[in-house]
Image (cartoon, rainbow, N blue to C red; front, top):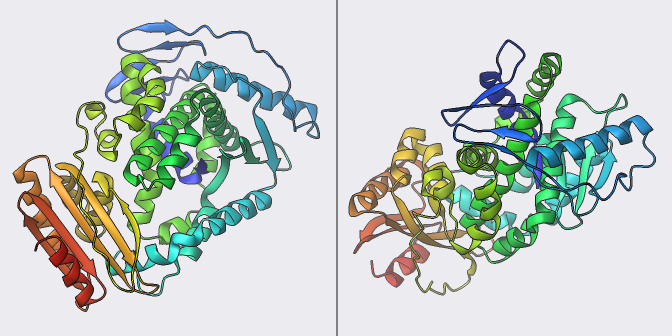
Length: 437
């Protein structure tokens, strides 16, 4: 999982509202108060539980022998702190690669370039929907953005944790980043999440993947927040100064839907984990790694944590038409979060939240001919009223965001909303005919 700088800023702002001036750390999470005591003791509003962990089976970290002994000791201490905060032991020593900040940025850029095959099709789709300006190079935009925003990452393919180090050693933000990434390594060893998440992406189960990523990032962000609560006032001051001084030029220049998509797994994911942590500590969170893929999970359940295990998405299926000259790039679920960010950018957050709130399930298909794009979304609301509210918002979106020279159609067919957009009129009309419009 890539660890973005923006989550450090978000945690800094959250911590500002959670830390008392007395130097003792008390935290309000989801409207309930908890107090941090000993590292291995966690108090909630309902119960106090002491986590007893087995003794470690190793006391050295491989691959860091070239570092000064004091830094090796600091890394090992961060490993043990992460284990205690998360209530889990590493099955084997984590692999840690300490690199320069320049080497980190180069690695991140290489990873983005290796995953850029889908960029042309997505770039055309986002331009069709008015989410991306014509002529914007999506690959360059994301490469610059990730190169700027990454403070370290966990590579699930190799099990390697890659973090930068300054000449003078680890800064407070880098230590917090280390705890975040160590949590990924720890939970992947325990729950094998990387294999599950990769299978979701490979199967184009994209809304499920977004929800699962929110679980993963929310878990690590929660442990990072618990770690920050243990710092002294001086260390917190250093953290705030460093986190709030981070250059976010590329992020600020990115379209709103990209900004929202980047922060979602950290922001909404942390809120989801906090909600369940206050109920039963890590029990629901640990169980979710195996439960969520089978529910199936959805971004709706992340956005509304109380809906987890209850408000499951309705399955919407159709046979997509074959369009001469076009390739069917993807069939998947757009999801509540996808609708929100799409509507937010064109119509404002209030409209997006209200219209997407009644999402019950959907299906979408995306076509591309090397230059032009086409999109079909068939969405089902929880109620007929929810479907009508979504129709009204999508119609306003079509009028506001989609350029006049493109073809777009919005209507309710029987009890489902159909949204169709295409660069070419004949393509849009053929998709419409295939769904009975």
